[in-house]
Length: 117
Image (cartoon, rainbow, N blue to C red):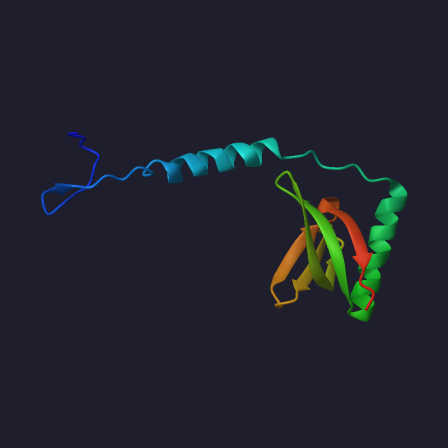
């Protein structure tokens, strides 16, 4: 049982059966991420107008909304409040519940829902 990869402590060989597992998990995680990616959804003109309207309402009333957006092959959701709209860059400036500032492109926004309290 002379393996060079086995750790030695006080001249005793210690067996570590799962030493390769973390590397395997990172490789498997990368494969799963690549397999679960989707293409960007295509929105109709009516859906884009509805999203625009809800973003503008959130901006004017400073109310929190639930936004679904496309990022790197995945659809993500977040509760945000719109603090600014930049028509030149086609983007929306938002803050989340912890007041972290985020910027979304109009093309990345897939759905907007009002929160009923």
